[in-house]
Length: 336
Image 1: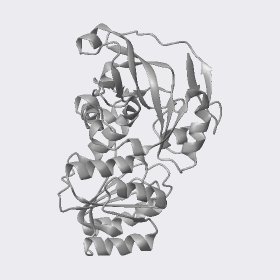
Image 2 (image 1 turned 90 degrees about the vertical axis):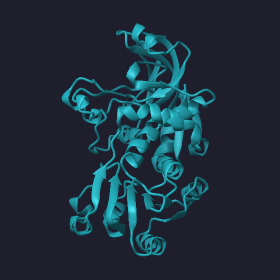
Image 3 (image 1 turned 30 degrees about the vertical axis):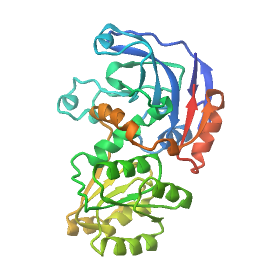
Image 4 (image 1 turned 60 degrees about the vertical axis):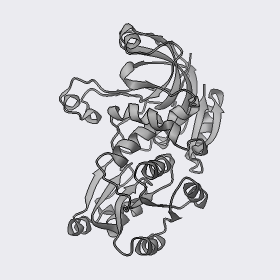
């Protein structure tokens, strides 16, 4: 079968590898149909030496496909050959101290499998059936939706009268924007350098969308929040300047969540005294397995088609990576 790999930094290619087969009763074999090219994939592809937990051998982690074989336990769990599914490329052991404590994101034995291949074998815990009528290509957003559901909404207590700021207008940002509007109705501002992406954010429900230039952010913060600052801030841009700005624009006892911390190169990015004086909470995003069922259930309620910049055949995998690397795309997808 055909599978993608990184022969050297900045290159992605196809090679022939043996087709995987089931080894355990709780496994499923998938015919992969679509794979998203995430910015994390680009970091691995470039081998840019950032501190990132994915092994550099992992090629693709956002996927959707169909079950073509399954073990006995997967059958008894309700899966059938032909089911359209998506899920997480990460597998958690369920047995270590972290998994038993509900902290699967810190699993001592976690493993991730490359999904940019025609066939893959996963544990049944890693997949969910897509709802009837959901386009198969929309399934690749399951990973991002689960990530945003858990980190954006779980225990956040985002009130309807809250002010929320999102830095960056990438796939995760635009999904998070929709989830917040869907489940809380809070006032959401989004800041980015790209006016075209800001316009998309407006069409997806952003109440305010403006340049991430520092003086523009400060001016808008003062006007929108009446100088109180934002109750919830999500730094998803990978821009150290934006992370450093979060404390300045946070409300007293505000909440800051950051994603993609790799790429920040200095402890001076954040003014800890500023956070201390305002009693601001600073915490990271994490992907957790138990957000998977809810992520799949939410797919039909989100506008995902506007997030797909282009779909490339597997034979043009290099073009898809180059397009995502340019920074002009939201999400490019590979069709297998």
